[in-house]
Every structure is written in C-alpha cells, then in structure tokens.
Image 1 (tube, one colour):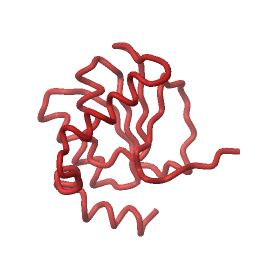
Image 2 (cartoon, one colour; image 1 turned 180 degrees about the horizontal axis):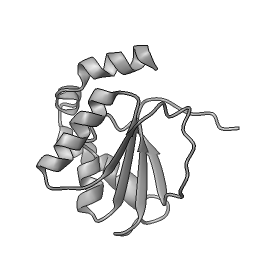
Image 3 (spheres, helix red, strand yellow; image 1 turned 180 degrees about the vertical axis):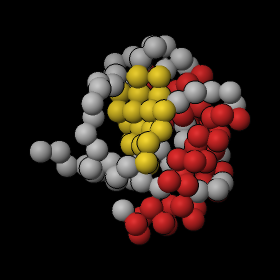
Length: 122
C-alpha cells in the first residue's frame, strides 16, 4: 500500500482539476453512466466508489440524494475528499483502504470504479 498511497498522496491537492481538461463535463458523464445505465438509481439509494481519489464525483451523487461512500488507498486523497464535501455542505462516508483487501459489511445499490483498473473476484 505504501508506494501507491505515497504516489497519490503527492498528487492529492488539485488532483481532479489537474487531471481533466473539462472536469465538470467529464464527471457529469460518469455520474450519468452510474445512475441511468442498468438499474436506475433513486434518491436514498447507496453508491460505493472504489478508488474515489479526491472525490470530485461524490458531489454529483450526494446532490442527487444518494448515500455515497468512497474508498481510496491514499490518506491524503481521502482528506482532500472530506474537505471538498465539507466545503460544499455535503455529507459522505470515506475510508482509507486498499480496495483489493476490503470486505463489504453492507449492501450497496451500485459499486463504481473509474480507476483505469480492473478487479478479479473469486
């Protein structure tokens, strides 16, 4: 966890803003895919994002009335995410964890991951 976490800790401040040319458009597209493709998500439903980064996307889910939880390996990314939502008066749950090691203790209506990665489940 150390090498990956450290890499993203160094990138955390301004991560979303520095990663996307049209951040608002790109995150809105991710939100639309998650909430309207497949099973329609409604206010009150729950979403878990694996590899949430600085969680710019969380704002869209929470403003839509969804219960949002985000997990990231980087403590700094999670701190930036918590601060971002707090500054906007929004509430979400975050955890620092290696997503390949987590065990879910509750069901979610949707689990999303936009990390340019994939998971193998057995």
